[in-house]
Length: 268
Image 1 (cartoon, rainbow, N blue to C red):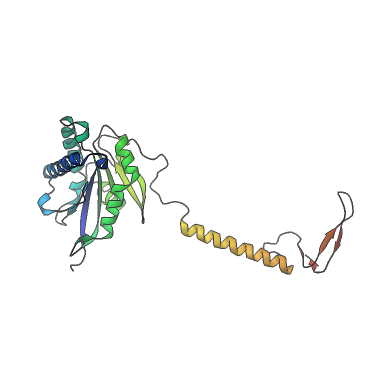
Image 2: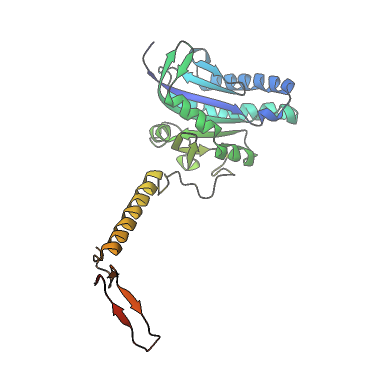
C-alpha cells in the first residue's frame, strides 16, 4: 500500500437530490458533472489529472499536488455559479441544479478499494453540514454555497493568494458525527449570505465535555468532603461557620426563648 500524500480536495453535492424521481436524478447527475467539468476547464483545474470519487449525488475530487490549490476558490467558485445559473435559465424547476461545495486539504492514502483519510472524512462532514444546506436554501440569488476548512482559509484567503474578499467569508462551527471543526462559508455575490446561524462565531464551545466531567468530579469530591466533615464533626476546609457534629442535639425554644444544646459529640 502506498503511503499518504498531500492533496487539495473539492467536493460538490446536489441540493434536494433525494426529493426527485429517479429519472430526474439521472438528468441532474449528468448536469452536475457537465457543469463542474466546464467550470474546472475555465478555471485551469485539469479534470483529467484529478481523481473523481462518485457518490451518487456528489463528487469528491482529489486534486494532484502539482495543481495550485488556489484555483479551487478563485476563479472556480464564481465560474461554477455562473455555469449553473446559465443552466437554470434553460431548465425546468425539477431539473435545475444548485450545489453545495466544500474545499479542504490534507493527507490521504490509496488502498485496494480507493482512497481514505481524515481529510476526506472532514470534507464530507463540511459538505453535509445542515448549516451549509440552510445557507444555500436561503441564498436564492446564487446557485453555489461554499464552505472552506479553516486551514485552507488561513493559507489561501487570509494570505491574499486569491482575489476573493476575506470579509465575505464567515466563520462557522461544523459538528457532524465525530467531527468538530472551524470552517468558513462564502456565497458568490453576497457580502454575508442569508441563512447563517445568528449565534455562530466559528469558535469551539466554551465548556467542553471534558470540562463538564472535571467540574462534576470536583463537585462530587466536595460533596464527599462535606459529608465526611459532618460525620466526624471536623471543621470545614473553607473555614465556614459553626458546625454541630457527633450526637449533638438541639431542643426547645421559639423565637426569643431559650435554646438548649446537649452534646454527645462536639460543637465547632
